[in-house]
Length: 373
Image (tube, rainbow, N blue to C red):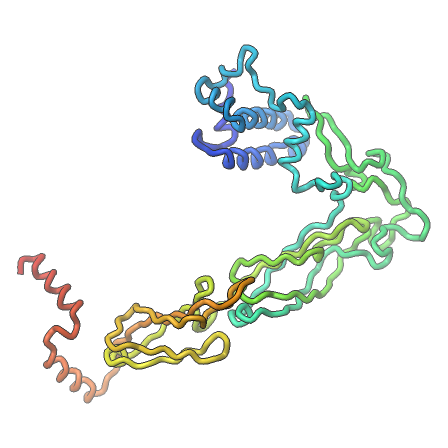
């Protein structure tokens, strides 16, 4: 039987570093874990092969031997045990590495299995709100602690739970998956180790019910598109008094009529007349803080040049100070002129020597030289 290349199994190139190999292993192991495939034998075999590949590639000496000799390096007594010398405990470490985010390392599956889910809420802000910071009221529809039973999941004041017979009150069960043992939260009691004997009529033993509630949240100054704000313990309620999840606010910015934004810098496209560009002048912009910002335009400014006003930009998130305001100058050529204006321009043209616009003079001189003119 032809054995599949370990690098191909993990989907990484041969020159991949340790971090890339570990990330690929976590992704592939999650995808092909037998628990997610309802005990599929093919997935079980593939999962075993993935673990064997990772065991070799994560070890510098084993990887060097594999790179030189291939699978032959581990034949005739040199084979690599995918779980090392640790046996089942070695697999437990692998299981913890892959699925650690689903397990409470401080207390195991029993304490964390019934924790409420995290929630996401997308919130849209104006540029002014992002500059000053704002307090918003959001409406959340999610599972919250049941008011009827105060989250107990049962009625009455006496003890209303009994040990789960499926897991023996442990909150987790072990099942045989091929050659190894897998430990997971009990599906009957959801990891609590107890089952309700007289469930609440409102929440049916869950200790939580679907509720719409309003929540006031503070948005700090300086947030930008994609900023994520965590509101602890305001997510979905846990089962029968277990910990609540968190609420995550994802910020989206409304388009501003004047300013574009790049980090803490505000940018305005500012058209000016060609006479202002030639003679100089000034422009006034409305500042994001409500104050006017005046910018001096030097004589002879060119289209595309930028004028910067320090400290008039956006607030710095979780910091002090402000960014800058930038005016990007666009010199506008007139499209409508009176007869008098045209005459004045024609008189000006007659006085031109070419020195007024050195860039144009230089360009056309190069063009003439190129064509041998």
